[in-house]
Amino acid sequence: MKKLLKITLGLSLAVSIMSFTYADKRGDWQKLGMRVVNMKADHDVIPVTAFKGAFTKLKFKVKGAPIHVRNVRVIFGNGEDMNIKVGRKILAGTESRVFDLPGNKRIIKKINLNYKTVPTFKGKAVVVAWGKH
Image (cartoon, rainbow, N blue to C red; front, side, top):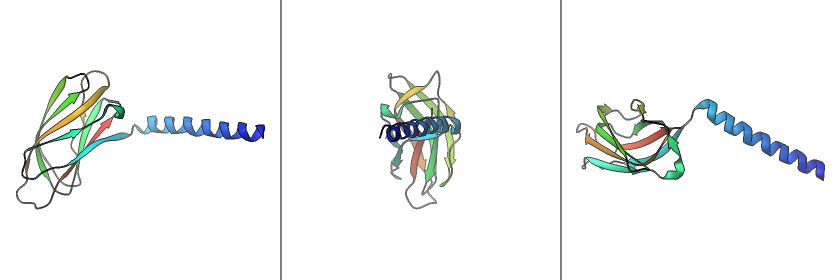
């Protein structure tokens, strides 16, 4: 019985260590949140909770329909904010460039999107925010 317990604990520890190492090596992007943008509005908010962690980089993926992102305002956990001028159309199925966040890892409270719709396309765009630790 003790031998089985030792083996089980050893395997659990090995799997835990491997999963942490694997995530660090891949440098995974973590989904922060998403918003189905109202194609009649010109701004939307993506709330991000503190449990997501702290991040050094940010990017956006768009699905469904293209949108023209004017700028993005990132509000950090400490109340500071950062305005990112994007000024580009992001086509459906593509992603924005990667934006570096200033300082060390930052907790993101919310992301304000300022955009305009692309009039030649019908349908709704889904904007997904991704952060990198």
